[in-house]
Length: 394
Image 1: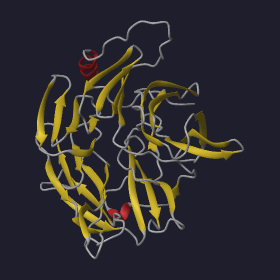
Image 2: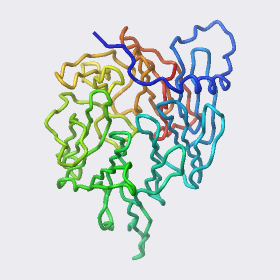
Image 3: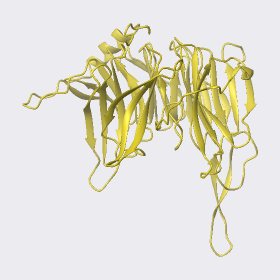
Image 4: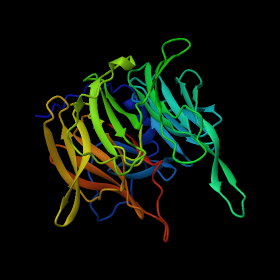
């Protein structure tokens, strides 16, 4: 039986609900039945932060590159071109905290710290707190690549080495991966080292470890209640023919000697496109916030083609519970999900190329319904790699 007793703090939800309620305008009345789902789903789609409710949809912010809501629902961290902004949702005030554009952002479990990851040409990792300003934690590598030319000439282009996989293991412990070596002149760039940072120390204490040869680790998710960490391991990433990707759970670690790859999740998960990780081919899953089961997407091939369906796994016993099938195909861009506060429903954002949609799944009734969708412009398609669901609130 599912444990539906909420364990996460609801502090700040009332403040955010009040702030967002002011932005929501009731949809015009009509004969069509409105989709019924509780609370508010906050979505970033094509540069606009939207508030989805059963009464309608209303934009909250436009011109946004990426965004993240703090778990206590007090702050919205978002970026625009050459600017990163922190908005206090309760007070309705905001301040510019960085004159750079972030491509990914995230919060720790109690909303006291955040990270901002910029892309090329800056390629930097910042950390900060709502009371202060972000500080640069790591400078990723940059270099010139030879990309070709004609008649003996060569063309060089500045590229950034890999920097990402950011995850708060605890409120003060951040882990990430990066390429930290001399830049090659050509070919793909892969992370070769992981970093473990104690942000409570002054200055922050940083430990690093080298990945084994032809192997990369991805730090996917951490569970506060189960004290576990979910990891994806890519083996032989330079060879598509020998490529393997497996998912493990291990005890939360504070030293690199504490990381283990013994408890493998026995399921061929599909992948999310973004969140704290997101390169093509990486396996995906997240800890459910109340039950601490692992939620992911799985696929199977039938005589009629491929089916994509949800799956819940008990990380201790490997017991699997199959959920409903989705009207989606493997390989389509499906972004990291969000759960309602009571873990009764989960929402997925999917990009089908010519359409973007949000599907809500009732975890108790095993039913699905599309609660929002938008068509791409005529003769156009969506680029949803930066789009994401930000939160599901009361």
